Image (cartoon, rainbow, N blue to C red; front, side, top):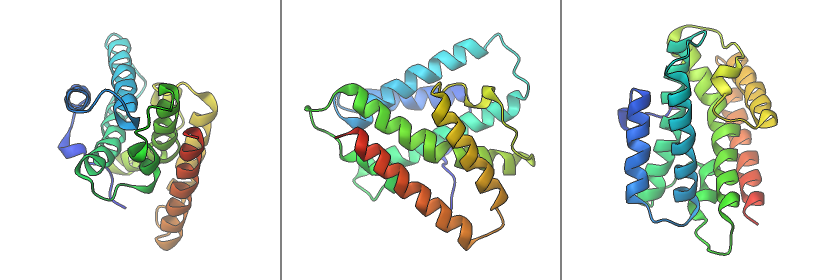
Length: 189
């Protein structure tokens, strides 16, 4: 599985700039625009809060943020181009109805990003930096839903343990994508 490149965004300020560019290009209503604005606000808040703070493993957290955002950017690009986006992002990409409340779009996007993309980003960052993943609230702090963070961490641990298991890992990722898609669709009912 390829990990999000986000069109080669490599820094948190780059993530913020890309989120702002997406925000300026999207319509004001619909699933992706509402989630993008939420993601931008969360990223700005985390960047501001962390400016004067020394995290335990700042290089890991910075790289995690970039890889994590890259997964969303890759999905947004395919949605925007009309391409086949990752299954977990389809409910949000298809959701354009004014009959839904903005919170439904925000929660559906968070389901895709936290439940599916975060564990993938944790493992990819760990592999890239040659580290075994260690649970840290700092790494998951930008998403404050404790239960969702715990589930994402459990998925990251399983993916780490299966990193050399080829077909088994791919089957697990497919199952994770499908169950996450169902959760996101349920939030949009």
